[in-house]
Length: 385
Image 1 (tube, rainbow, N blue to C red):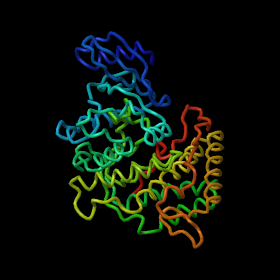
Image 2 (image 1 turned 60 degrees about the vertical axis):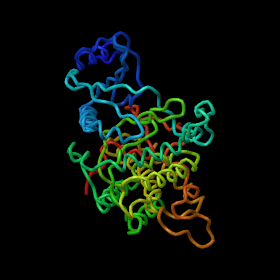
Image 3 (image 1 turned 90 degrees about the vertical axis):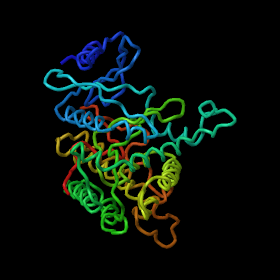
Image 4 (image 1 turned 120 degrees about the vertical axis):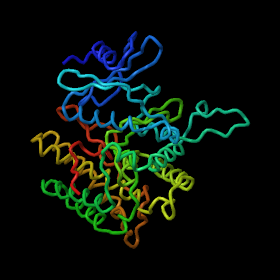
């Protein structure tokens, strides 16, 4: 199947009646699963076309297409960001390609986002004297997450997507841990750290919310210091709000997660959340950190399942690095009380190990071009509840 830019432009024209392409350019995407392009039509509108490279990727696109159709104008009006509009689909070989409206802007690496949050560009925050200054990036992200988590559960139910209770969320993580432990390749110190979190009932007292479920820096469309849009809605579900914070743990600057959580809490107080749920639970970042660390274990399991020794070796190296960080910092497991004499406090990002995974982005990709992504569950994540 051809995936040239010209072919993708033709696919977009076939999928959207009346679309007459006049120009086409590449669009960043997960190259292991999709080929994408941005198409400019004769009316000056831009469209993003995505063609899957596997049946699994095709199913993910179909799910996202369905979710986007459930974002009614009333729901969109409540969001402080844009969501792509589903425009059409068309058979592309044995699979289906999908066309959505294009949101102007581009994603940034998480450490670039952290720098932007810590040191905003004055040119991005110019405003007229009588207007309220534009919010910082941390505030934007906090408001973004609060808006997602305030979405009505009917949005998920209408798309026939799953919903999980707090206990089911815990059991799903426990299943992931057991699968990883079954490989015999995870350091005992990490297994013990994760087990303590999973066995602490206080950590798992939270109100499930609608969550994006797969949020990463590359799902945020940024333009001049503003979050203009959010993409990647393939894993929308009702579940643990911490799932949408896990990607923040990968930032080298822990202040990013702290600032976003503070802005999130402030935004939640202004939403329609009913008491006592107007405040984030005390262990939200603890569970987010657990998710980020377990992402490495999922990466290991994927390598073992595929028989990909190079992928397994990468995962083992990163798990060993995480173990060293945990032991060096002598911090408690997320959600547990620091031992006497230590300065680490539960839920304190400053006491966390270095970002789970490959902070420098130097870990080699596997044969499919994939790379472990802290906070983003590996495809094929267990749904056992």
